[in-house]
Length: 323
Figure 1 (cartoon, rainbow, N blue to C red):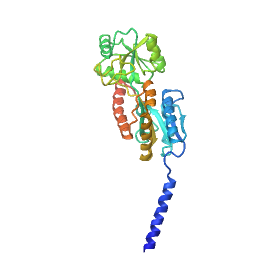
Figure 2 (cartoon, rainbow, N blue to C red):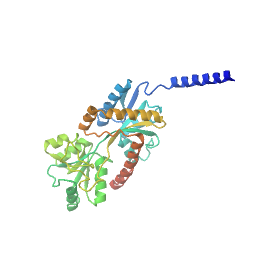
Figure 3 (spheres, one colour):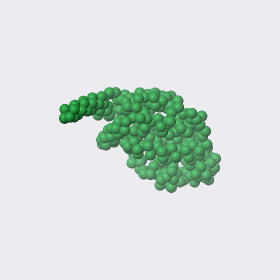
Figure 4 (cartoon, one colour):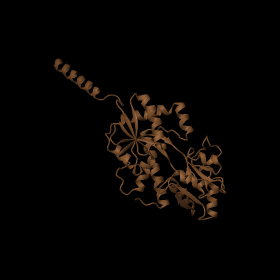
């Protein structure tokens, strides 16, 4: 009997050892970040910043691969079909996860079921950029001006479903304003239009709008956040003006295919949080206009759920119909 027990214990130990050998610590090989946008853009830059740090930490290659096209859909599908093992991840913006569900009737992936939020890399609060001669110094005065002059105050957007259209559509609905929408083919043309006085306002990040402000042809009207930006302390916030809902969420986040082991997700999030805790890295990213949440998978999932509700209201207010 004792000999039988010894044999059983030996077998169990062998099985446990084999299982351990078959499941090396993550990561044991190259990790790929799929970015569903072209190289050189903001998402690509942020992805490479984090990839460089994780590669040094993990002692394994962390490669950024750009799979651009179809409003981020092609890259999302690539990750959707990947093995759920943590070695192929999607680094993207909220457009892929939140916005596309409202813009396409037949989205070939389910943002909620096909992906697992790993962690939120960045959170970006944007500014309302106004032409230099606009007779309004904050959001409260802007709303008063639009009420006083209906159908005369205009905003430039980056095209259908872009952040300015959603934000100003919601503002117009809630405050009963009649604003003129002028769509442009991207952020740059919209900012140029503000500088040239073609439109009154648009939205911008701090870095993107820096040249326009420096030229003296545009100025930052409102920072869409609860607290002032330390880099632009004289710019009032939308919350100060009494419009805390005036905020367009913008972020970069990391996602894994559904079914990825929780231990792998937790490992990645833990290591990202360790990188974000480094003062030199945090300062570099903060100087670029990025806040660094490094939140948990559950916390990031809640951020997305809250954003979906807000985006639904914005889409309805803007009268957008899915293609």
